[in-house]
Amino acid sequence: MTKTFNRRYLEAVADHVVVFDGALGTSIQKLNLSAADFGGEKLWGCNDYLVISQPNVIENIHASFLAVGCQVVETCTFRSNRLTLREYGLQDRSVEINHAAAQLARRVCDRFERETGLPRFVAGSLGPTGRLPSSSDPQLS
Image (cartoon, rainbow, N blue to C red; front, side):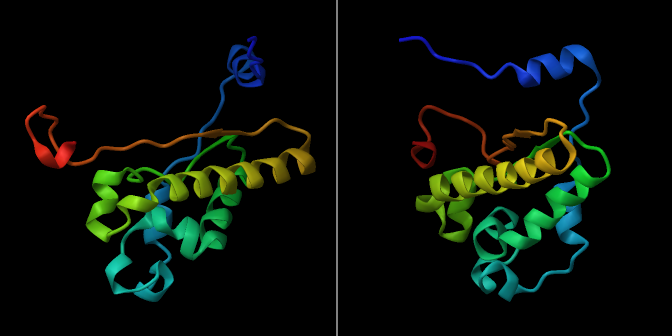
């Protein structure tokens, strides 16, 4: 089975400096969102869940980065792993949240590509779990 590979990103980085977005978390914090925006007190502060509870907030932030010349936006998934999402009771929704974040970022990039004719890319954001790995730790299984 032959897989096809979209070489547009590799061609872009070979041709010029590709600028990524930055400070998604800081941009969210500056909005002073309420617990209700996150989906309730239990979810308050779970930035990654905003792709479900307030996708327009994340979409607008992505758009703001693209509007000033960024060519790559990172998904709002810095802490969207089941270990971290467990803090909010969302561990069983990690795939849903990651998928929604990727679709949202791609949708914004597609819109900017149509408007400008310039390629825009999505990079998955992957952050720490806050835990040290250990093969004998039952919480990490």
